[in-house]
Amino acid sequence: MATRFPAFSADAGWAFGPEAMRSLPSTAIVHSFAQEVILRVAAQARRDRVEATAPKIALLCEALLCDDDAAAADFVRDARLGGMPVDTLYYGLVAGAVDQVGHTWAKDDVAMPDMLRTSHRVWQIMNDLREVFVRISDRKPGQHAIFAPCPQESHMIGLTMTADDLRRRGWEIELVSRDDHDALIQEIERRAPITVALGATSAEMTLPLTRLVVALRAHIPGVWVMIGGAITTEEPELLALTGADAVANSAEAAEQLMLAHLSSLMERRANRF
Image (tube, rainbow, N blue to C red; front, side, top):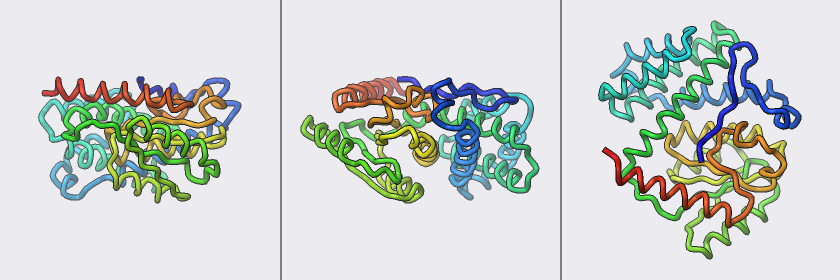
């Protein structure tokens, strides 16, 4: 299932559907989304990669902040096609440039509409790079997934029952729970999963889920993220708001989606070059 993203315009920021607009203030989601994108990707910058590509990092930073919406994506694509290693491409070039953007933002040298536009460009680049990370991965796809409730989510019964159901179907499911956003990201990153399922029960969890999806993509670029729980029926615009890959409200639906994802991974693995 393809990831859907909120539409964007420089004047209005992300444009949400009518149901989503009623469930959460767009300004809160957009600002938090932009902040999470910039700070999370910037945190991935590695000095050994940054020093090796410093001139290109400066050029990409300029492209991210310029008026041309395609300039940054084109720059990254040209670097990839030019043979830049994927680790250097993401942890050096992209993360290094975003780190410089973040410093500029911290000094109030970038207006909020421009920062929202820039963070959207970074998010699109991250999405484009996911395919590259998936293609080059040496990890063998398997019936394994991390299940985690959204931080502060008090209802664990549904997620636990779904995990147990999938275990009976032959899946290896690790259930991870942390009350703190950063602690949960660190725990999931330590396990380096291919598939993550996040659970939530109410529409009020949409913003925390959005932050989780952004953070997971920044720390594990090729990860596939599914959202489950009662929120999937309460918030019809969940995919568009969070940028997740899929939603499921039953163990059967979750298994079908995860199997389809594994099939896609194996096909890419067989056809990689």
